[in-house]
Length: 228
Image (spheres, helix red, strand yellow):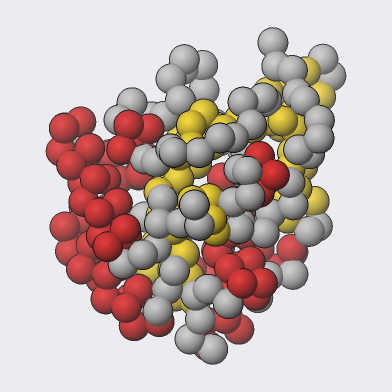
């Protein structure tokens, strides 16, 4: 099975070498877990480390906000965009049917192989029916697979919820699921992640700590985390 390396230290170890090519990965967790950082690092590494162009589709943050935030990690997205290796799409979620055409044309224009969509939670505020939302995510996944893209899709877990996504449909349409936690442990907060599923492939079934510092995200794949 051909795999796409994320380039995120430790994460590819959990993925048994990387994300299976052309799969859609759901990245889900509560607020503050670093979902956007993971997706941006996946895209940035794709361009700078593996020569795979990327597209970031946002239903929430404008481009200048994201670009400014990740400069602290040394990631210059403007430079990649000017070189035609990266494209940022900011789109209003209430015009969702149009965005599929825009996403497809942008992917073809720059020859993108890595896609990040942030987030399905914002999209669900306008697509109220769960069956319709599931159909929409499925259509997005079909387009991305047809264009041979490996992608990350962000969802948010409502704090205190027992589910692993906001609407309870995202994980069934996605090929893989990464669940991220940010929980209080004694007098501090602990970050940990778990691979909930990875279709057609073996993967770590343990809970692993991760950190976010000046270099971005690092997964401590050789350690286990414990959240009560």
